[in-house]
Image (tube, rainbow, N blue to C red; front, side, top):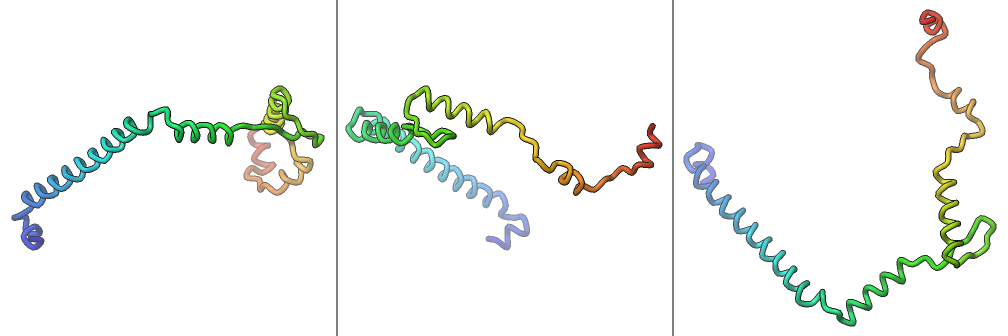
Length: 121
């Protein structure tokens, strides 16, 4: 069958079989998606003890109970936590210049010479 395909005689039949296989694989995938949806609708959406347990555990895990400020004091009030978080991200997003900027710039090779600059003026 492969030899005939190389000659071009059985190409149409092979393409038809490939399409049939792909259609069967697609229908199988759709069946599994529908089955998962049915199980979710049947079991997952109930107000079950398990569902509430999982939701409560996730809430506990994602809750910040307190933060330590810059002086090392523990803060657990909502306003204090908000203030610490705000100041942290404000400092994180501000521009700080390195103390040795001249040394850093000196390591960058120049492309334009002094003579080139003078010719432009």
